[in-house]
Amino acid sequence: MEVYTIKDIARLAGVSVTTVSRVLNNRPDVNPETRKKVSRIIQENHFKGNDHARGLKQGSEVIGLVIRGRSNPFLGSLAEAILDLSSMLPIHLMTEYIDERGDEFMTALNMTRQTHVKGLIFVGSLIDERVEAIRGMDLPIVFTTVNAETAPLPRASSVAVDDHALGRAVGEKLLSLGHRRIAVFGANPVAGDSLSHRFDGFCEAFHARGLTFDASLFRESRFSYEAGYDTALTFFREHPDVTALFAMCDTLAIGAIRALRDLGKSVPEDISIIGFDGIEPDRFTVPRLSTVEQPVREIALRSVELLSSMLQENAPPQHIIVEASLITRESLATLP
Image (cartoon, rainbow, N blue to C red):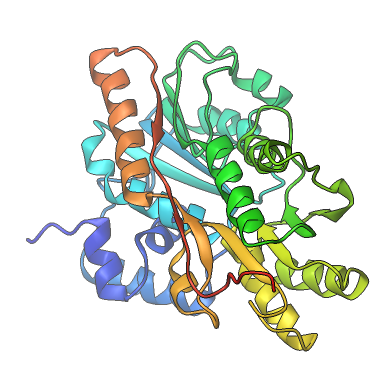
């Protein structure tokens, strides 16, 4: 009998590896018709989920993959790439998707109550005081997309981009185009997290020119298309003098582009926009979105390699910074 992998099931069903993983782990956030289709293909092909944690009993050994931000397509792509590379890991991988306001560390604790977790990968995590919940875990951990060098966890590694430098690059780009009244949409920066580094770098670009970012032009927002739309709709009605927007993720930027069109404004003629992440829809928006493009495959590969080396070779923690690129497309214009 032919042995099928999770990638084979995803291909046969015409869905992503992430979606198959959600079905295998009985996640509620799957369309009923999609769940039915994937389940049928799983049954027809006698897929047992040997390379993932389907039907694991208490005491089974697994790697926990916790994704914080189920509506963020960048994190979804990253999780899918990690799942795709999970054959490099010596044991099963079990995924948990939570809301961006959920607690990934309590989720990890709950995992340990159900299974024998040997290691953890956190995607889209926020390292703050909540991390104390897992401080007592003697497990290898990899934080993906956030630098965990200062985290109070002795066995924590991380893979991230240089958010401070990239935030500064965004600020320098917009300022070089003549913009001064620049809005920023994003989650509330928490001291030490990736978004605070991104925001601090952006503000540093102002300071380097003897300018100061107007903090009243920052808007806290969830990372979704709808949030970007709603935030932009309200903000730009109240601030007609703002000429540019830095959205801390691409979903916010794409939602804002639609809102501006509904307000009768043109991008980039009236408002220049730049995002962050580099998701696939950026190349198909009108106009095409300028963004900071993070290397999804490299981040996923480095994360899996790190965890694998800590598990199999008892390697010490490492903190890896990967290169990202500022991609200029059609959504930026020089201020007249």
